[in-house]
Length: 91
Image (cartoon, rainbow, N blue to C red; front, side):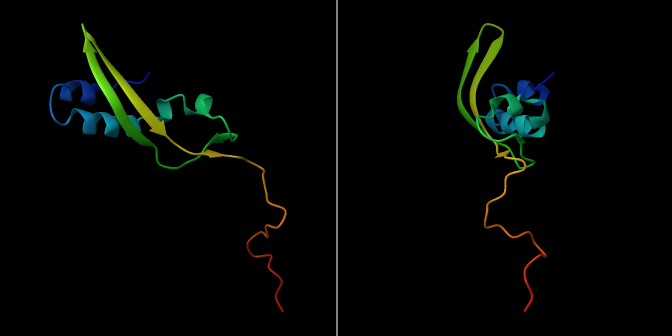
């Protein structure tokens, strides 16, 4: 389960957005990124970027609208003209 304890502690401070981004990036493995892929077979082992678009407090809830940017990989795909490294012809 994704728990954002540091972001909760930073709520109401100027550092909240920065702490939230850092915590989401640190726990990116717990986000449902695989389900969000529209192309590719699996989530790439590349950095995740978080953009906070809005924050609203209602009663005992903090709602965050955020964009999570990440990369996917299409496994097993090779271009027809691709030459594997080390197999170049030597003249």
